[in-house]
Image 1 (tube, one colour):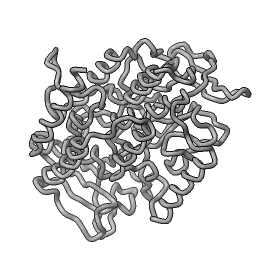
Image 2 (image 1 turned 90 degrees about the horizontal axis):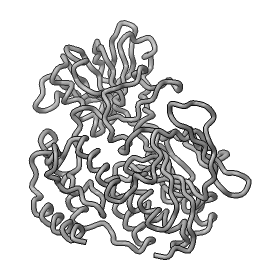
Image 3 (image 1 turned 30 degrees about the horizontal axis):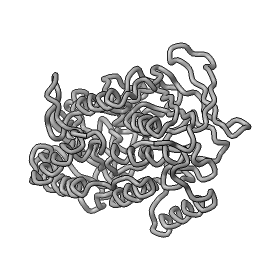
Image 4 (image 1 turned 60 degrees about the vertical axis):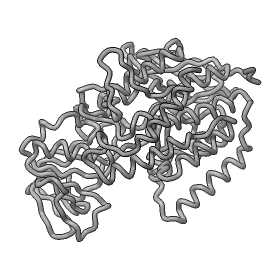
Length: 446
């Protein structure tokens, strides 16, 4: 491949998105430096039993723990679907590897390390290096100021043609608003700081949320807690029921108020005396290092304006983001986005004009508003991720998402609903697994 232009590119973060971005940028012919605050690759997939001293993670000056993994976490997608298109997530027989189809977080971490080694990404990474500030200079270039994590000081500034932001979005928690909670005497925790169930033994816990992590954590806590009450906006005000298979988990509507006497009230007149409120309420996009002079903002968790969730129109292609969408299969989508960014920077792929990209973004935001979809769901791709990925693949001239992957994703979603307790160990799509491994054999042989 002979790129039209070779650029000096800074990639912020060496999690899954940063690894893929670095690989595809260099393959396109660009010169790449990946800045990574931690001492190893993996981003959110690096498990630590450390939690933050501020259990809600609201203090802006707190020591930040990057990972949100809990000890027992297993993937909620099968490895065949979850893996990169170019580097299948197949079982490895070496060492103490986790051979399960829905493996634990440690296997994903090992897989990302394998990816970095396979494609020589490590040589591009500056470990233990914190990016303090990213901004444009007066010549259309980007400056990146960084410093070694333990050194302090103002750091060193370097000039790049382009910056790709891959810092993840599972570190800055979103907290539910609960009237009266400031006077409530119990303890509040965000799931970012959840690791093991033991601290919840014999406690009455109110867990807020209905995400994948909320489902898993509620079951795990119930094994030791006295009571677990799952409060969710998806439960109607009239509904209150125990979770099938459990005698100490209740499904409830969203709470109304918290009181000084330790009770929590719900819309149907129920009051519960609780010890802990556990917020499984998601995360906020957070780019404390990025200074675009107000061009790119985060408003109610919408990062914008962005063309196709990647490019700020007036700064494209010199500033881009990988990995903002959620309710997706993340790793393959990172590949599509990274290929697109790399090709636009080299000039091999053309973008619309800034005006056209702005109009496209505005039309998208307008469609969300007219459909009554809140801004905070801007990057939710539930039901549309494969159309999005295939659109990008068309721009890149690369193969679209495999049909078996789409079918397996759907089959897993249905199985999760039918077998919420056992879907990771019981399934009925072995025909698709066979098809996937046939495809993998072709890729591995190449």
